[in-house]
Image 1 (tube, rainbow, N blue to C red):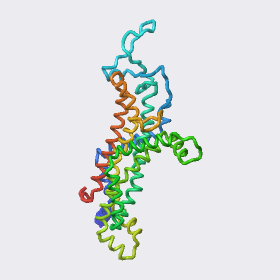
Image 2: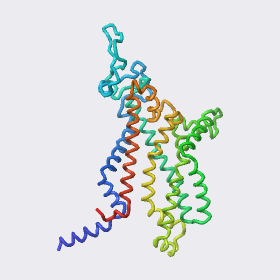
Image 3: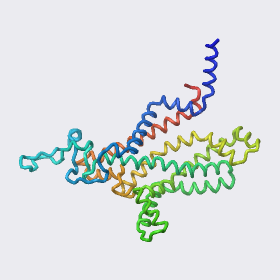
Image 4: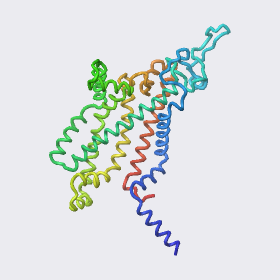
Length: 348
């Protein structure tokens, strides 16, 4: 009898699992998604505890150690020849300074590459969270209003979305960054809004204007996705029942419609994160990103590309870091898409 009761309780517990529990269990079985999540968590830990992980300062220059590399890097790249000195200290052959003091070597200014990679993760991860935050705050609200009320509200919001969506995103961001940097960096009068924004951007290492530039364009796609999901959810019986019971529009939107469209929104925004990281890396690569000496993987790739024939590791290591983080978010987004797909419920 106890065995039957346990079996019945197990079946009831299994049926009572909600979508999020089912999704987590499916996500946990997706190896690539979990690998991406692990890579993201490692980067977050490194970014938070960067001062405890490395002993060097990311902006400290030791010019006597510039372009130095440990032997394992020199052995990895056959093009790099270690410098050999005679008894009098004159260079006999090679050109690369051998130094095992730096795990990943140094750049042209003698700054530790490992340290700059760790601190560079802060910039990419900051964009990875700021971009979706702005997109969700603006895009979801716009999409909810357009999809739920329809009519002239829908027409007005979607025409604004169409105009912004028609503009090339990367060109718009470049123009915005050029405008911000030229307008706000040349401010002398203290106490003005321009001066305050310029000082805040300087203290953030250039992240303020990057966040504004990405945020002004990132919400458009989310607004379209949200509107489509709301239009579909609005016709369901639970929305009709909530309205029949006297629920006002605000309550029905946020308590009944929004929770049921949250899954596709999370998936779409997770898959969009690599594009935000790519925008920041590209802006830093062309000199419109973070302010030196704040490290950014895009800026490090640009600096390393100038001497890539002689010191390929200086561009390769930040490129690998950027590649891993972007693919980690892609793997996680694909895993979330499969895990939150309602058609997969009950297939485990």
